[in-house]
Length: 455
Image (cartoon, rainbow, N blue to C red):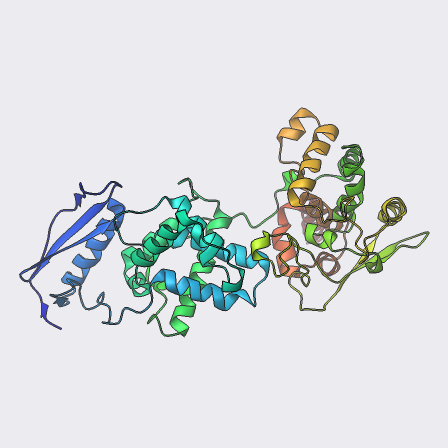
């Protein structure tokens, strides 16, 4: 490698020849002038900063590439980021649930179009995302015919995608982090969304290290903190028992049959703290419903909803093991007489599906999240005041589960028992529901005061 210590840096300038705003970093190594184009001025400045830091450390620069030794890539640059992302998705497909596949793809829809060279003829971002979502990240046997307008988008991506090894450059890995921090419309993404996308990027890069496509995970070399995500349940979303009963009564009033058929499903979310996908998979054989007293639900599986594109069955709901549990593991939940009566009434009125499922449409199909969410919002308008409707109170059906767990904890049920019924670990349970424990401060003050009086 022909190297030189004679390095000069020039000002960054706007690229006037590009339709999209871009900026050119310019420098000189020995007799050779070098340049590199970036989509934003900040990325160009970061790149130039890395070059200047290398020069200050006394590193030699390669005359051919213009890069210092610490940033130079081997002659075999290896796969592009797009190529490696496709192989990563293919390897993970078999062992991943539908929602996991969807989450990985959603992250890569942000990353792949961002990690490209500034080649002419760039397609619209929506076309780039469409070719990834509808074709590139699906197993070959599940791909349909690629739409003509997307063939050019696929070709452009294959030509423009940066080498995976380029992510070892701090400026490039920062551009990846910038991409996952934004929604597709350019607005800041929610903290939880950013964290999920970063987790996908991190795992992909770790896979690259494991397969010896990267010397190290470049995320470890940059200082970047993901936005803080709320890790606890907002107490404002939690309904009290009277409000919960009013909501369930209101659900039964929505529509001619849709609300009445769903009411027992929402009741399971409140009285048994079922997740929506667990309620969707509940069967008659999972329920002990005595004529009097408490009953029992023994959960065996869940039916989470995802786009048909990502499910094994090609339907919107795949059968999966319970969340955080091994395949075949079950969870027992004692249910109060009020829920026993609701379920007995539901079965008497609507029967069960051939496989014993309790909750389905009149045509036997599982409820979509959009369908039961629409019924829920109508029930809120019927049961709540205008102010309450505008508030976060029970804004989502899932908030019924939060209300159930909060009720159990505040009733004095031991956290170990609550965790077992809700399908949580005890540590996670106490952390997530910390803000929903009422009266703890007053009780603690009384206990401390009692001890102080005896001192």
